[in-house]
Length: 81
Image (cartoon, rainbow, N blue to C red):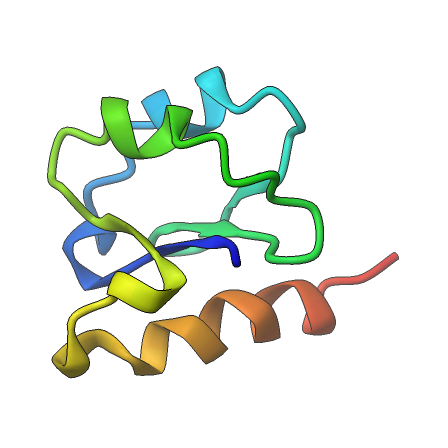
């Protein structure tokens, strides 16, 4: 189970989440940050510092934000290597 960044991050891009991540699984995209679900260790450090409450455990993502589960994964699939 990984953490997921949702729509509240769009155009926010404060970056605290990326700074505190101990495994560097958060990357900046064009409009927001994304968490690589294959690297995330579920430590919660990013969730604690998010100024806009955009980060959720995958199984706690609000139903209206479920598309962001796939968007986070797809970001890393499309930007490999």
